[in-house]
Image (cartoon, rainbow, N blue to C red; front, side, top):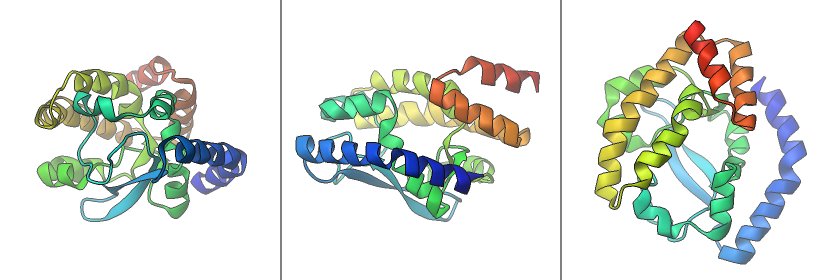
Length: 203
């Protein structure tokens, strides 16, 4: 199913990806892509692809909070608003690194910090979207947006975001079906969180 969808979407969206690449190159220069190591198991990493949305990414690390807001480029704000920065992850799906639906692949530092938690979460292949992504994404952005330093961002993310997202990912994995995956995919496109959440609570 992943392979069929990703081939279809790449055929459909490659002109969009090309245009975005050119716009980033013209407006912000190189690099066009932001490459970050993420984990697909507790021991195996891979290179996650995104369109670059910030300046000075060569030494970037950790999650994005308010301390990094001033580095977001003009086109980066547009890409992030509509999650277009994640379009290159279609290549990751094609490679078999991630699926369309699953827990968001964590950074190695968080897997090492919470090994038992991520041993449970990463029993499923990570994905571009998932229940935690849909339900908690806006809350996470709001919490981290108030952070003014990298240390504060890390503390808030580890205390408020990691445990909650892990619980939602494990909850979804226990009752996951092909149909529920398709509902989550559609919900992600149309940003409709509540119907999916209600279906999980009834389950």
